[in-house]
Figure: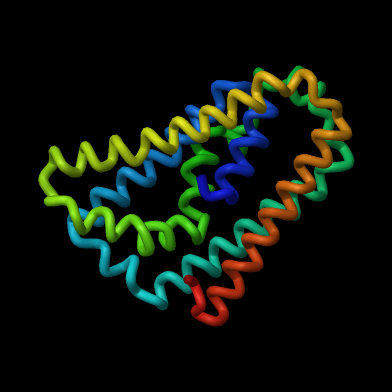
Length: 195
């Protein structure tokens, strides 16, 4: 439920594509996260505790979030939700919800930070057998599916009632939130204060 780039992408994509989008966004997120969970149980947790690696991840993530936010702000004056809905049958590959879920998870600096602060403490309590890893991951990812699908349904079913002006304001606010997260992670990359 951390408000961040993945949630902003889910809202934006659901407004374009409809209520089913949240499920696809989490599929992309789940592909990356399942790989990370297996890697942690296989011993890669040392990387997640390396300060230099985290600063590099934070810097790359900050740059990616800034670029995404700037592109969103540039497009705001021309956005029309009714036109987007009418053209949604031929989506661009860049805005594919599965790919977006994967990339925004990969480029989100809070992703490894969450796993350091919470994920590692949870996985440390689990005996790393295949059955335990499967149950742990299923429980974790089911909460992601529940939250993002819920948000997607609210936005997807309500999108036909959202006027273009309100949609432009929403996208602008989401872009500003992305810039805020980019600043936080850029500061963390520069100072090493990633807590």
